[in-house]
Structures are given as C-alpha cells and as structure tokens.
Length: 609
Image (tube, rainbow, N blue to C red):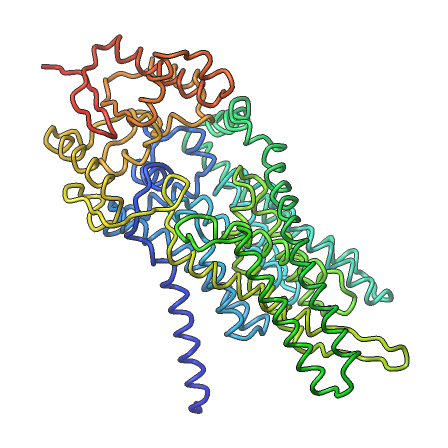
C-alpha cells in the first residue's frame, strides 16, 4: 500500500473516531429532573408494575434496548447510561459516513462537516431512545432502499421494509414514516420518463414496492404476535387504544395540533427568509452593475465578488442584531431560527435535485429518500420541527454536497443579448449562510445541555451523596437539595421502595433508585385523571410519596386564593391540580405523614411503627 493510501486511511480513521466520540461530550454535564431521568427510570425498572402500559408498549423497542443497556457495566449510573445511549448517535454517524463516502462518492471532508453539523443539532437528551432509535432506523431504511434499487437487490428492499416496520415499535407515532416507500414509485416514474421505450418499468416498481411491503408487514406481524403471547392477548391493543385516546386531554398530540406546529414553524421562518433574499438580491444587482460598468473582465469579476461579500457580511450583521440568532449558547436562541432556515434550504435543494431532468439516477433517488425522511421526521411529534433538527445526518451531508457543486457554475455573459447570470453572488451568499449556521450550530452543540426543556446555565456543582449521579456536573442549588433528599432516603433505607412522584420530577425514580408504584410521571396530560384514580385504588401497599415543591406549592397558593379564576383559562394546570388533589386525598385516607422537606422536595409515607 502506498504512503498516500496509508495517509488517507489514517485521516479516514481519525475523522470517524471524532464522529464517534463527539456525541459523548455531555455525558457528565447537567441533570434533568424530567425527560432524561424519566427515560432512564423506565429502562431500569422496565416492567408493567412500574411503567405505564401506554408508554411501555408505544415505545416498546426503545425501552427494551434501554433495559439491556442498563444491565451493562455502569448502566445503573447516570453517566454510564448516558454514554451508552449516546452511542446511538455515534452509530448513525458512522453508517452515514461510510455510506456517503463509499456509496455516494461524497468527499470525506464534506461528509465530516455535514455530520458534525447534524451531531451538534442533537439537542434532545440521548436517553430519549425512542427519538434516537427512530432516527437510526430511518437512516438504515434510506440506505437499504438506495442499495436495493441501485444494486437491484430485492432482499435489501425487504430488509428496508422490515426496519421501517420495526420502527413502529420504537415509537408508535412513527406510522407516517411508511411514506418513504413513495420514493420507490418516484424513481420508477423517472426511469420511465428517461427511457419511454423500456418495458416492464411498472412491473419492476410494483415488485420493489411489494418487497418493501412484505418486510414491513412481516415485522409488524412477528413483533405483534410476540407481544400478544408474552403479555396476553388484548394487552397491546388496550394500551395503544389509550394512547390514541389521550388527545382528549393532550390537545397538542392531535394530528392537527402536531401538523399545525410543523407548518407554523415553516411559515413563521418566511419572515427571515424574505430578508435574506433581499440582501442576496442586492448582491446580485451589485454584481451585475459592476460587470456591466467595468470594461476589464478580470478586475470586474474580482470587484463583483467583493461587493457580494460586503452584502453577505451586512446580511450576517443584520440577522444577529435583529435577533435571528444570538451568542447565548446555553439556550435555543442561537440555533432555532437558523436551523429552521437550514431545514427549509435542505428540503428545497433536495426537492430541486429530485425533479431536475439532468439529475443522475443515484442522486435523484437519495435526494427523494432524504427529502421524505427529513420532512416526515417531525410528523407524529408535538415538538414542532425540533425532531427534524435532530435527524439531519444525511440531510446536512447532501445539502453541502449539492451546494458545493455550485463551484462549477461560472458567471455567464451572452454579449449579443447583454445578459449576465450572476452565479458569484449566489455562491457567496450560500457560503456565508452555511458558515453562519456551522459556527452557531457547532458552538451550540458544545455549550448546550438539555434540562427541564431549557439549557443548563451553571454546572459548577456536584452531588457528594447520590451514588447514581456521582461525577455529574450540575447546578449548585440542584446539588444541594438533591444531597439533602438523598441523605434522608439513604439513612431511612428507602432506596428500592416504590414511590409516587408528583410535581414534574419523574427523574427522581432513577436518581433515588426507587421504582415507580405505577407511573413515574403522572403530571403528564396524556396520563388521565381516571387512570390515576384507578391506580391509586388498586394499590396493595403504601408507597413513599415525593412532591416537587415548586409545582405543588403553586397549586396550594392558587387553591388558597381564587382557584377557579386561576385555572379558568388553563386546562393543563387544572388537570394537573385535580390529579394532585387525588393524591392528597389518598394520603389523607391512609394517614400519610410528612417526614422530610427542603426547598425543592417534600417526602411523605405511612409510619407502620
């Protein structure tokens, strides 16, 4: 092997190593009292005795995978489980890097930068495996469909369908992702257009579709049958029926509510896109003016580029000053609006490549597949476009690859008609916008750590008592109150005891090593009041009860004041308050006593002595 090949191989390995390790950057930073520990608790205590059946089955594969990871060395600790789940991002990045460089022949540099952008936008805690396994399975599906069509391998198409079917058990709301099969028909249509004389195009397309569909249905049938045999016939159906009925109280989970969030985000961003277009138009006009005014083509071309650069700098300054992005990297502000524009640009470029008559078959197919993947990722979530931000592994790489092709477009002057095509301005503005996005996304990825739906602001504290959170950097106030609570739990041998948590503190089940009596996040709108009432009435033992003081204190203050007025315009708070009062009534009926209280938590249990 030549020295050049050895050098390229070494660079390849180094880039892959960075991509694999980069997702581990935050495994010991910031604790979240809600989503992160909630998922970890479901992994560690993966049983219908401790996990709400609705979420147990609707995210079945994610919980099963998390449960297996929790059995690995250090899997019972926050840092250990955080590291294991972060490897789902590493695996997706690895697959995309190999696929893009080996199958799509995209340069290692473009692929690396694109994946770094995608990894930096992974704002969601990796412990939410139902999200990251969804993205991983979608990525695998795209790769398999591409290989199946380009290499004429029906087995690949069958496997693609099987992975897509399995994704429904990762998260039930992944049902809309079956739309990826549309790409099979899309490429079939273009094959026929490009060569009308070919025979059997329709038959081949139907055959490809059937292989995908057989794989899809086979996985659905096998997993469904397994669940029915293991957990009893009707158990899964009952849980999913409850999931579908949760929209009675959780309005943002209705199909129209979820779609409204997605399309509203696109529409709102048009305000900024219009302003970016205005600056780009000014650059184009300036370039054309220079080219028509100056007689020396060489100097005119250089001056035209300079004027475009000045307009691009002005655009960047305008966007920062007007709040399009910010330098507060421990919040979503630097990322959310640029990421939406980046997403719109990605979809626009992929769409143009998909329908352009000059596009090669392979590029058309991958553009179609990734367009559908990126677009559909946010469907089925109540988080607007945020899931699509997390799933740009292939999207970001392809955007950079297709835009990089603009370098081959040269300014064209047709002297007879005095017509000039100003590609220089287009390239300058595309480059400046992408540079702005890269800087903002990369620094955001380094600085931002999720906690209670916002970013961690202070990580100068550490717990000195809690063994699950050993070595984790966190807010000093959180560390203080957690240490006080943990010390009380340990001294009274309450770890291992069942617990009811209320006040948006589901993570305490994992952090305190206390399995939930029935559901560790009863505050959620999706968890109906009637279900809580039934669960409380079915309890055989008296679990420990821990309240989050911030939320429950708010309810008490409202009740002591004018409760009706407080809740009249907020049905979410009313439902939470009613469930809180159910637990309070349960405590009163069973003679619970308050045994601990600090600024953040209050603990109650029945003293049997």
